[in-house]
Image (cartoon, rainbow, N blue to C red):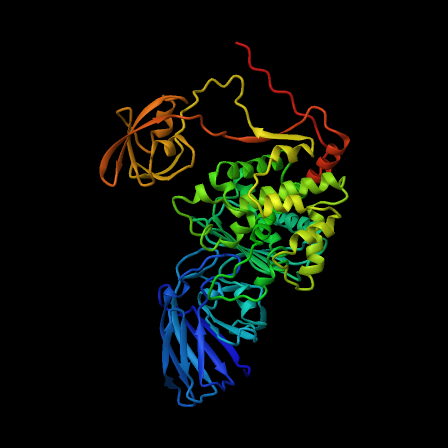
Length: 597
């Protein structure tokens, strides 16, 4: 197939509400037909989405007389243009965009955020060819993108191929742009959106520390520049990684107090690590992307869960988490895993494979039959790290595996085969890891986090109530619910809980406990009157009809878990802890004495 010169034109200067005007200009066309296809997903977000829904006004023209060409919509996301022998073809269309999320086309009177997959269809068969992107914007707008600039007026950029175009978002408007240089590499922080309780200097310092610590963790950097896109909104959406940037959509006031700010730093650490793990260290099946259908891999647990594990470790190495705070965050992640009944149902590999229809499309039974491969992958990665540090006497770690993956796969652009990871880990550490992978990666055996924690001189378990805590222990039902204008609607019933055994069903509206009215707002307080072991007549409306269910309340699950230093750690356990946490092992602090009365 002969090459075609491709130029996209975006016109955001016209008055048109949230509908942008686009063109695809094609030269050196020699084929009788051209197919333009809108992607159904973007790398990093493993689910199919109806991106094409905002496309309208699709018209193709060609030849010296600008003749209108026959165009058929042959599939929902595919248009076929009959070129009629024209060597130059222009396709005009419009797209509606008004959703500020991580994978977005958002157009307002003062802002454009462009992810190419949502607004720029590819020319089928020509995805590997260079493309240009020409922007027509209000004159006072600033453009921030990692694409190579071709000329300044109008702002025009070049991508080596369609994949790079999709992987290089464009932000235009009036952002505040800060620049830092960790390891001498320019990194921009592009803050877009009104308001925000951030401190610019602190943001510069802390994001620079994250980049610096990540580079040190892996060993070097593939970057010549990088952009942190930070969109300040009222509806947070998380982050999406790109090869030379990441797009975060966060609450505008997430920078204070400290705990909320640490949540923001955790997001940025995770997305920045993806510049290595996912964007360059990636499954072989994702080295050539098909944008029209799911691209299945069993390695997403490593790409996401292990990235999440390392992102916390980066914050610790950067001293943005204290040792105690780091362990507290790991305990929180373990709680998310342990409070999900479906954690024992599927292996990490299978969770990765079915993410397209499972993780991204949860429903009422999801927590009973599945679990997030982020959460389970994070905790399995933690245990694998401790296993390696213990058995190698700290000569190796999970960091050793990451560095081998980077040097042998990420740098040269080799994809990781579906069955290669265990062998790579064994070669990187000098250990035989068949039992670990068979039990916890390919199998469904639950990891005993307490056992692995002892390798580092710690125990793990529920945090006990304080001796002087006299507050009542409420009864537990085992339902998740939502407030529907004051009514208590059950959304999920967790497996092997009192509600499950009593026959409570998703969709039930709980109206009374032992004859007394209950609402979504009052439920937690009402259950304090029914401690574990209490008999309840639970009145529910089910599909409009009143039912009475007999239920015995249970004990609530632990509110918190914690890591606690053991009394007498071995020298090796101290060494493992120090190599892992990056600080000397310390004994448990004595409990504060209860005040005298």
